[in-house]
Amino acid sequence: MTVILDAMGGDNAPDAVIKGAVKAVNEIESNIVLVGNEKIILERIKELFGKDSIQELSDRLSIYNASETIEMEDIPTDAIRHKKDSSMVVGFNLLKDDKGDVFVSAGNSGALLTGATLLVGRINGIDRPAIAPMLPAYKKGLMLIDAGANTNCKPINLVQFAQMATIYLRNNYGIQSPKIGLLNIGTEPTKGNELIKETYQILSTKGNELGINFVGNVEGRDAFSGEIDAILTDGFTGNVFLKTVEGFGKLVKRNLTESLKKNLISKLAVLPALPGIKRFTKTMDYKEYGGALFLGVKKPVVKAHGSSDEYLFYFTIKQAEQFAKSKAVDNMKEEFEKIKKINLNA
Image (cartoon, rainbow, N blue to C red):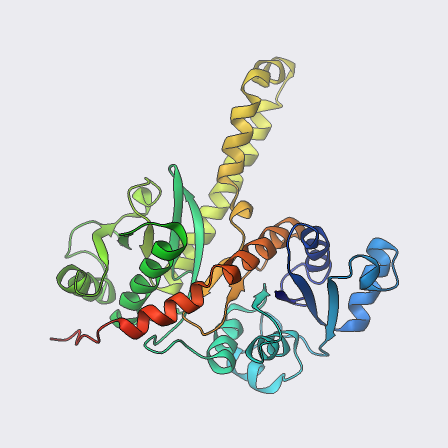
């Protein structure tokens, strides 16, 4: 098995990508291919590790040269079409040509969506793929779908997001009937914009027929109660929600750390509670959950956080291997072939 890694994507590339790959390679079974400017990657390996070649670090690490980079400010469609030798496009083509089993990138989210759709292709029956990260919730994980791939959605898109979340959580987490909630400003059916109200109507009347266990509207403050398994929204709202949650988690961790180190008395008093505090901070750390799965395309694709450091790349690479091993994409293809086409306007 081979993990294809976009070495040039993300705010901290290529250093964080290289370090993450070196850290992960000895803890996974897969080979790792770093796609990017070979000269730059080798220069960074020399600077970081004092080695002249990547094989000196591990015989399961290799480089596939790509001379261009898709920047965060690039227009996604133009970048995919015109930067043919970019690390992202080359990585997608390697995945498409079965020269790897899963592709990981922390690069431009819009370009990743465009590339996954145009180069790898959508699963039959799915109009738009979606980014689906796992977040911490009370005594369990919570899937957020969509977290940024589709800023403008139609009700059919959100309904399909709910179907994808259901299939993934059932096959990969053993949750037979995942509870799907619709992110809204209130729990009443009349709340929200037209997109949310129309989606609510479809899911409440046809959810069972579509194989979706829809539990209604969910406010942001109740999302992490442990009562739901996936929260459904458009990519714009989902991305704002995701980054707010991550920022608040950092705030809690920072304030907690500063409070515990405030003076000698607080440092001594906290010693007996350290194991519990460490468990709590680990649970709240989004890095532990890796990247976000790209659900709806024909091959496994994982979106790493744009600001990923070496540790987050390390977790994401491990997650990507498990995503490929789980055959989640194959399962989703099979499930969508069986799903009955329903007229949502009827």
